Image (tube, rainbow, N blue to C red; front, top):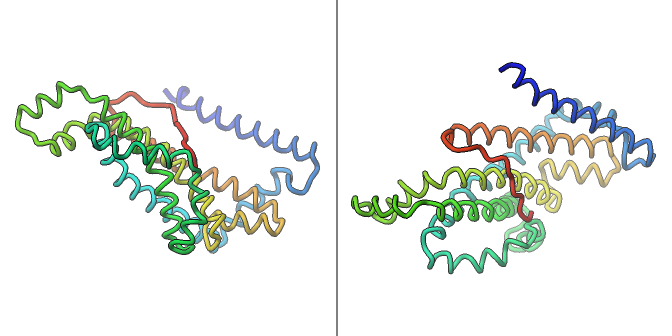
Length: 260
């Protein structure tokens, strides 16, 4: 068992080393200031992560990401489940989502800034929009996959429509909902960074874009590494939660990333 568990870790290490070597080779081949060798950004990482200002910005980004994600889940899961079980609800929401889904959510940021300013609320709203749509879709698909016999039996036992939705549909659709939520974690990170790059007050996106403006390329690439690490740990953490909540379901290895 130990050898089996060690293989993924070894594969990840080999992939990281290969990526660093490719990065170094490209930096030597192009020889431009905008593509430094990886060793400079790697040396910059400890400096960034020991600066209180950087840690404050990372925490601010994670707070916005968490708020937008949680609010999106609270909104999207019930809507998706109701759409899956009610043709009237699906007929009402489907055209709206079909219009919104293809639009890059970061492209809405300037409009949202005009409406509610450039504070945290605007960034949280963009994250909310980015996360909601895939969660609605997967909740909808999960609700549609529930066997009608289970619902008929529950109705025969006297459960109301809302009770059937809560006690039957939600547990049965939970594995599919978790797929949507995992996709939502990725989109929350993407929309969080892009919103902070547009409305530059604080956060990792602000640090990244400010360093890019000032030509501090070691810092730029160090921030890319930090953002990638945030995405990795968020995904690993969510996968641990998913395994606890739906330990009885088959694991899903597919992540469908929607428009950000």
